[in-house]
Image 1 (cartoon, rainbow, N blue to C red):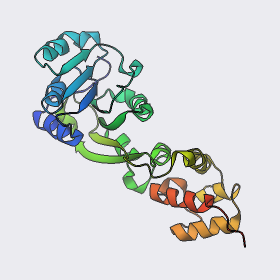
Image 2: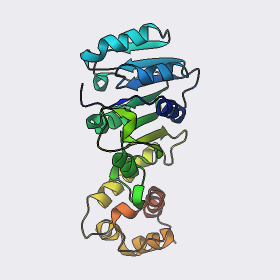
Image 3: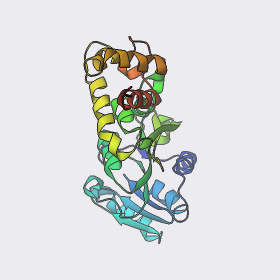
Length: 253
């Protein structure tokens, strides 16, 4: 086993499937299928499930589960090397927590992904969804295209073996209409990169090296941000407004 804690509580399995919201016509890719506890529940709600499990030690149990589920395809291989389906699909899984960042990166790069519902460490889910009022660079960077949401907390006692910490249900949804046009995304990403990789201890100090002070002051007043605000305390919506104000065409008189 690749440091995976298996979800064994039937009530939590049902709750997770409700959070994933698979429909009868949906294709769901499951990562970290294990012995198939979650696979069976997903198959009861989705049109088709493609279940990935890399551990050959679990292959026999998963294959046995898949044989009784006609709408499930079982793949004993490395999910991270798989190509996304050509058509729209959702992703769900109780993943090995050491793989969380890699799985999230795979999801963000998959052009046909509509949504991902993942069981992660509680602190990771909080970090990515603005827990404690603070926002991560990855969340802010992808906010124009994806919504990050915390969809629940799962007690550690729902897993076997029991991990040291609780889990969070992380929901990542692609927006039907991006909040910025694709042509604006490179400039937005540069702004976020400057903010999170900057100097001076505040977002204002980082941006001041790249934007006229008068325009920057006006943008901060409009967003109601103090000059001393640290970058992690800036909400994604405030980032978008700052970007629009700082990159709006300058009027000529």
